[in-house]
Length: 165
Image 1 (cartoon, rainbow, N blue to C red):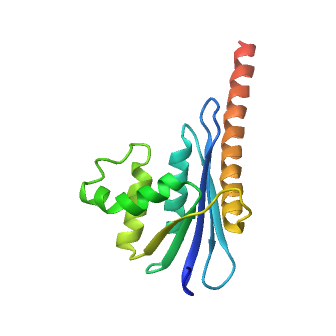
Image 2: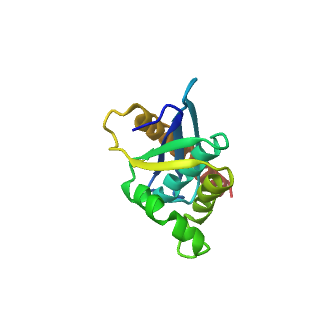
């Protein structure tokens, strides 16, 4: 159950299974007071799980020092991994973290430890009408669409250049 001063952070990642592997991440945060906060971004040559972790890292970076937060994701594997493994990964110098997740996992850990965040991890069923999850999904998809448009524009420019030769 959410506490009265808890930030509710919904995160999601997306990756399109096409050449160049464009992807996106998004978060939607309902603060204890005031309007929601949101953000998204894009990446190239990525995979969906990397975007999922990046979304969490970016959401935690948007919180004030000392905040208490519930992080919601429809990626049950990620939620369980962060809840169960983060302290062990830290203790082991992050040696057992998947290389595509390493930067985001370190950023997640740094936000929690150095910025004194209190975080609880919560799985939420995806595509089930939850406002925060739906918005985070939309933002991640927007990032992935923008990344894909960049890839397609570059491919088209390369085709044109080749035809001119």
